[in-house]
Length: 214
DNA sequence: GCTTACTCGCGGATTAAGCA
DNA sequence: TGCTTAATCCGCGAGTAAGC
Image 1 (cartoon, rainbow, N blue to C red):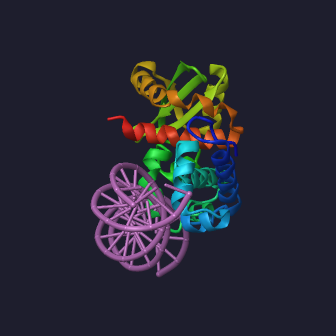
Image 2: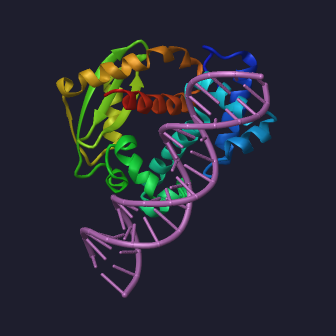
Image 3: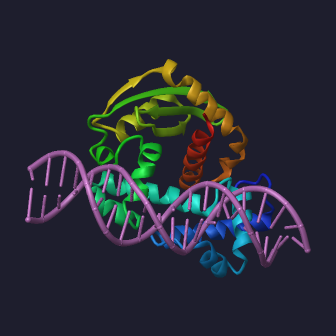
């Protein structure tokens, strides 16, 4: 875990790196802010501010993004929704289903079936970080990814939703993609992050950006 | 009738802003 | 860097709906 440099001192980045490691090590049993602060030997208030400054997201948002990744992995492995949500660290299904349209773009069951029955449209746009693919269903954004070339992105989308009906529609999503690029334009320094952590922070910031877009 | 998918409402935890 | 506080968010448990 290597936090971005803008706005954070080396000591804060080191602190946040330890916090990320602790959150990752905790797996589905994410510690509270107070527990995390005690573990790292600092106040939870200081930890929360340092984490936000360095990562652009809060510790809870980071843990939530990791949890969604675990859920997706469970569903892809063929686990049913009920087992997958508990294995991922959800204590009950309510929050998962509230977040599903925003995080998955479809219900968890549909995601687990490879997007069967879902109609997905996508667009690809150039950014300072590379090519950005944004895909959505009628329910919401279902896939956002960065890569150096468009074919790799299209392949990744097809792999993520092998059973979905996927079509390119630049007109429908170009404005949305532009807004995401604009909202994330301050995040270029995150390039020094390891791939998995960068992806987690990136996805979380995309969802935050989408929330900010009317 | 059972299992799985999904919804609702409440209480506690977290966040963000301001001050010391 | 630590503390307070109001607003917001999230987790939990109970419940309903749908499919077999």
